[in-house]
Image (cartoon, rainbow, N blue to C red; front, side, top):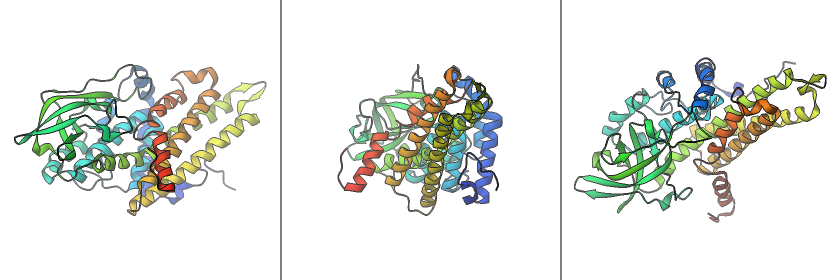
Length: 387
């Protein structure tokens, strides 16, 4: 019998189309050849690998699932595979693409005017315009309805006041999709870099997502023209719709992190000789490796089915919550266990496990904490809102 692929025990690759496989393989080559050699240094130095953005854009990875405006128009499974391969390198790299695509380009595409789409989307697809997404506030956390940021009409403009916290890409962004309370409900605004009263300082001293830019956003009477207001949505359904898109990609990304950790520890335990035999010859090690493979396989099948449902127009937010909850927890547990199996070597960035472990501490928190997703599923089962 043919030997199984240790990172695809159920031959999920056979369930992918030729185009999906080609996309996965091309992104994997980019990751292996261009991103992997530099990511540990960028993580050490807390620097985003901005030099990779033109290549990422040239491959069509920004706004890849959107139609028109220079976007690739790929299906949802292809976008998921892109996220998986990018996060196999680092969560920060996937976060950049996820925010640009799902949280910034998507709302302009879904809620924006034709003029707004023409103005911003082609430049965002080419990587010339970078976006960030301003929803979370320091006091609000998992309760976005509790936002304090507000916008008030002033003639044909809006005056925006407030602040946002934990914003990926904030300090390098050319535009920010900012959600604010108004007298007419919650609305989205495209705030442009350089508008008087708008500031986006970087958050320092992070121990997670160090190869990603994380920022605060401040708005002090920022005058935003009505032409920058997203006209096709009012209320929390606007930002929550964006988050559903982004969470879908997040269900795939941690699979890549888990595969990277398992691949590394398989090699390490095969080469490391203790008490006269390879570490991998111990039952305790094999049991842990087998459990990792089982959990990765389950996550792969979960995300693939979720992607097929999304492409069929049948995906529901609760299904996204199940996959985000399961797959990020899976990857974080695997990263922690791999770090342990590497022994003292596991605490340095010469190995990947601790970098993925630290990053996943953020991934399990952002865009819905594990507890929030558990409660979403509980509400679906019982019909009772326990938030």
